[in-house]
Length: 159
View (tube, helix red, strand yellow):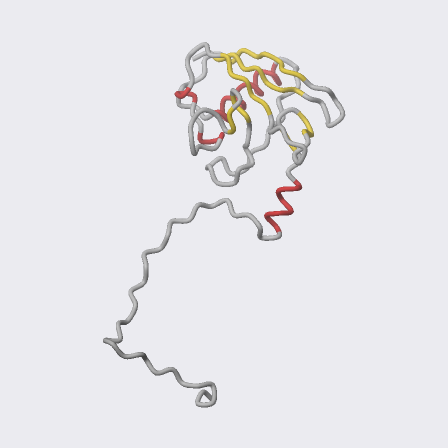
């Protein structure tokens, strides 16, 4: 499989940045998107170029560090899929793919595809955000009191 990547490159926070095209050849449709970026970086490094900077951590679809905008869509074309769990089988051979960082005042670009996530990190540390979807627990059965109200001891009777 051969892909043309148009990747956002930016040296630092103050640089203007822009899209740069790269050809990535001979990759497997079973590779994840991040594995394909690893292959690109190996090719760039072997050729004496600067690798593309991007964030990742768990590569298991849990942490959200790999957040990218792929062809204008957050995380790419597959719904409910993080970038690290997005596989190249969802793209066509010879396709041109645009890869950009998140565009937000809250997440300024530090370099290439890496953004400053400290604003989100502060929210997470304060307990104001949870990234894990929870499956609702089955309702617990309640005791039935066959028409009578259970007696509750008053606070004076509790010792």
